Image (tube, rainbow, N blue to C red; front, side):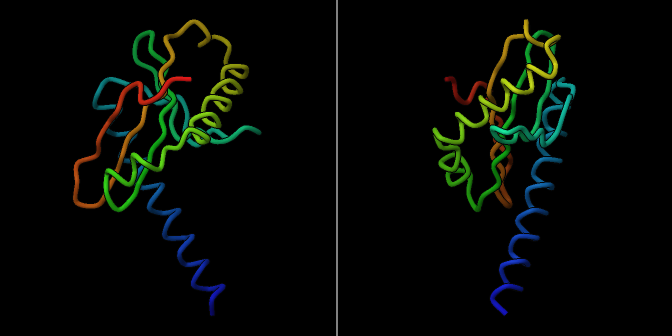
Length: 124
């Protein structure tokens, strides 16, 4: 039965992540962003959301954890580098966005709490 428990946990985590990303996309749209992409995968890693507003291009990491503090701590320097590397791949695919003001944003999600949007959450 351990394999079934692991699989059920992974399915729950996947669904939680999708729900958090949907909520984050709505939050960004409410702030005037247009969503250009979701779950962009590259050899370097994945970007949860890619959004634009005016000249700003935001690569957004969505973190869902039990608390907002746990979500914030889960965005490690190693993961930040992977997101930045994936953003480089995305920009190679869409060079027309190369002149935009690029930010790496985060949206933290936890049960029974308002999500927290952190513009320009990290820089490399």
